Length: 325
Image (cartoon, rainbow, N blue to C red; front, side, top):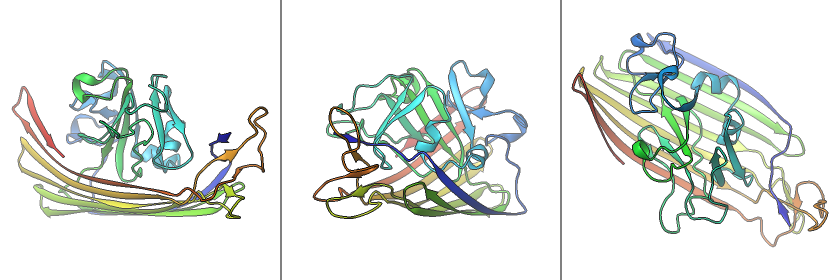
């Protein structure tokens, strides 16, 4: 019998550098109209900027600043912070199932009941042989304005696979009013495991003042391993390497029209399985804590490639939002 889990104790040390010339203000949650919401948390759960307390739905929103303060580096970290959100975790990044309010179709189903969006683009696997309930979208949580969790059916606005709810990652958008940059690094040590590290960087550059801007970010993270394959004699085999980046462009030719283009790539390399062999009846570890026997370390690789564009035109009393990806 196999068991998957995560070690209980981890120690992380983080350093960050932030610069801005001349810079621009960001409220608790970023919005295209910050002057309207100077001190409120703003969400776009209903496809428009609204104060969180005005949204007629159960929504949990955590800002990017809050996530950084709490040391959130992956969705496994994030899940524990949101009431009603859980994960069937198999120990490796990019694998498992998100479950909102306990609604799920089981570990062997093809599709999941909780969808994931990045900005306005669906990011969940769906369809025949997609294994959407086994492969959990796990983009690195870097350079985000906030993450929103919408609880309950969201099919009207967000389509299929959102019967249980929706997880929406809202990225920091390019801003044309100033140059800003950020560099961050951290080191993590796991009890009974290895040492890992990560580095992240982002930069915002205006091309045409108040009209056109470009924003880029990149990440390289080594998630330390903590399981041993005693048959092959390999230690800490479930180390993972997460690397990738995003390039975004925002063009505002007139006040009423906003055009966004973006491209995201990320690769997750899992070098071994995150499991433990237990005795069938007693569940006592067969060989020892976080150890298993296999003829190979059971490595795997996931690749994310997302290219999207959106147009938002404000008619005054209504807005038109069109997205292609």
